[in-house]
Image (cartoon, rainbow, N blue to C red; front, side, top):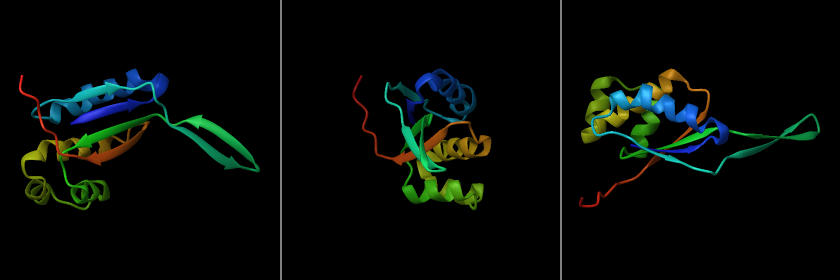
Length: 119
């Protein structure tokens, strides 16, 4: 699992959330990438535009997008989740935990296939 922090001033708080609450669920570990980028939202309210930073964590996992959607919908048993997630059950349980904790920042989930370098 990899997390890209786009929380501006909240990056330290978001990183701490993942280290304390999500890392214990992961078999391999977690890569956390701080970013200077932030997500700015421009919202129309009462005829004017309000601008604010939306603290966000981009979570990249090796689960299929369909599995991520099932987890977010909350309608999948642990048994089915284990079957659908295969070797990445730990990442599935980590996403389930993130959704359960309802953090005070936005979370975007992305699916990818990693290839590790030889060390």
